[in-house]
Image (tube, rainbow, N blue to C red; front, side, top):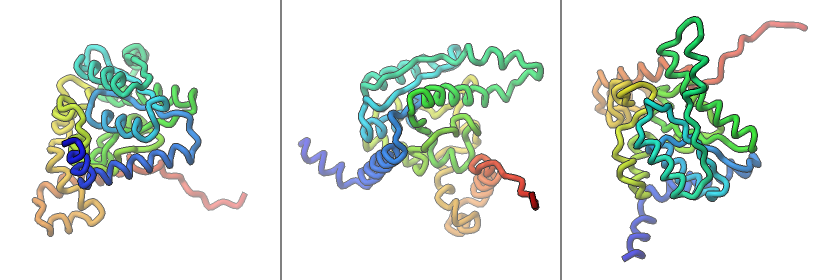
Length: 263
């Protein structure tokens, strides 16, 4: 029975995707001569899948997790899941609440409010890179293609990393691969949320479901007219492509002002 399950898994196209991700991460790691990789663990599906791939590719001794909740906002179940995952995969991990790091930002004279959500993501990035620079480690990003294409990430926050492991998988594909790899159902079935403010959910923030979003994302390169011509609802297509264009700056390096100089 077990052999039959292995055969079925090998025949699944998800097996090929999984193997590609493993080999590509190994190649990146070896080429750049890193000693470790580090990943922020939230207890959500994206970081869990990234962790699974990293451990398979590099071995648990070369992977470190950092759990960075905001106490009072991050749900205890997510903290618990993140710790249990780290222990299950037998990696070293650190538990570092970000609350103390946010205090001075809240004392700034311009009294940031909405900006505070981005500050939380950037604080986490700073902690990850502080570890990475100390240990010659690569920071693994956990963003999926749906988030990257639409800019649903914080610039220089969760968008700051050395490699995006699952960045070519839409959220729909992330769910498919997670199910194929038999990751815990309680993690797969969670409502996606960055937990940057109370009762937040990704889909509520974007005003669109991932299922709807991903039907349009696949036409990202072909453009809106191709999407509509292939049967995508025009209102939906316009909404998604507007989001893509609005956040295009997040996916590019900052522009450099070119000079006509003769120095």
